[in-house]
Length: 318
Image (cartoon, rainbow, N blue to C red; front, side, top):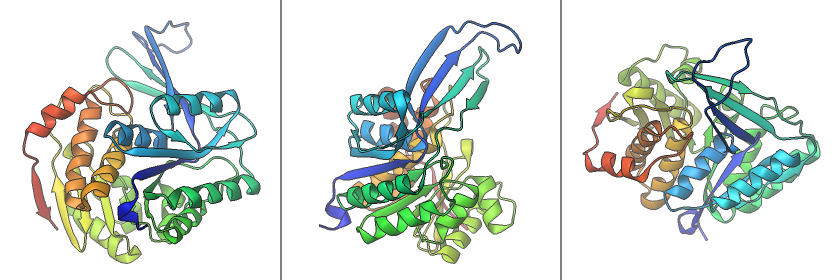
């Protein structure tokens, strides 16, 4: 069975969390405030990817580390959304990530550090990812690692994924991204700051993003490099050429999780068509729909349907 015949996408979240969204009228330090609305969901970048891929109709398996009562909540929440859990349980307690939204839409995030992993935990996860990759077309790894996890662990995972015949998608930053690139993932999605650090030049527009993406793809032998440009859309470099897909003009309610939604949509479309330009369009469309929803990392189907009615603005750049 080759990667193109496999139905599932597996996501890896090394530091899964409970995402707590609290809405307040005004965020005032050193006072007692009452939330107007509170919401708790399974979180972490990889789980945001999984959620969107599942909403788009793909079979999804979620793995990574979970711990304690919070970890049980994460696994149960994931399963309720139709995602197959394949987590590795470790000692300690999974973290919470708190996002406080005031009436003006400003966001304040507080991120807990989470549990600590040891060498045995890492070996167990490597075995789980190896097994899931053998039945998946794509394994998407997202986010930062927990304490105790070496910066080169994503590179180890990528090698296992490739050995099992699946594509390796990586969305991380800093040293984790640099080390991961050494194992030649099939897809990476740096933002403008992250790709600036990789190429040593400022990236601020589609043309400069295209040049940087082509350089990273060639230097690190990565098949697909996408640079997210926020409200400008995204630029993707594939096969020595680059395309810019403009983001549609939509009312923005919450941008948290938009990048993860892009990865999920890109993966689903690439699995279906094998066309990276079509996947780039899908990623921009779905991430734009997510920005329209006040629920973190999710979208309303009617918003996505409306965006899909318009022809995408695609430009070859370089």
